[in-house]
Every structure is written in C-alpha cells, then in structure tokens.
Length: 93
Image (cartoon, rainbow, N blue to C red; front, side, top):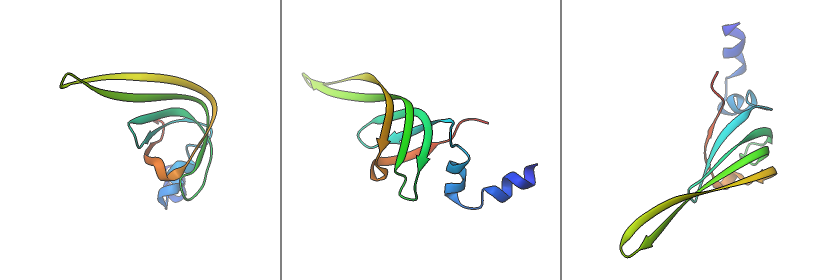
C-alpha cells in the first residue's frame, strides 16, 4: 500500500489532490488563515473551499503598544485566489 501512495505523490500538487474533500489549513497574505473542506483547485492554487472558518489576526498600535486580537468569520463556500496563498497544509494522516 505504501508503494501506491508513493506512486500517487510524484509532484507537489499530487499531495493537494489527495486532500480533496478533506479539511485543510490555508495560510494567506495579510495574517489570515482559512480552515475548510477543499472542493477544487488548479495549478495556480486557486481553490474552492466549503464550510470555511476564516481567522484574521489584527494588530493595532495604541499608544505605542502592539495590541493583537483575532476576528473569526464563518463562510459556507469561498473562492480563494491563488496569488494570496502562502501555505497549504493537508490534514494529518
């Protein structure tokens, strides 16, 4: 069975292909993270995610102090443009 998995992952995008219909983590530019189910993707890393939880880290400078807080949003379906993607993490196996 290990030989068939190795044969299926000969290119980097093959690992993403194995994550179809599973929950993944996507780190985006602008201190954003997306946790959602991967429905589709292309070679530019444009993706369609379902049941998405978006976590935005906001840093504000008040009186010379860095104050950090997070904002969480829920989306039923989301199209992610590939040029904003920094990292795609498949589910743990």
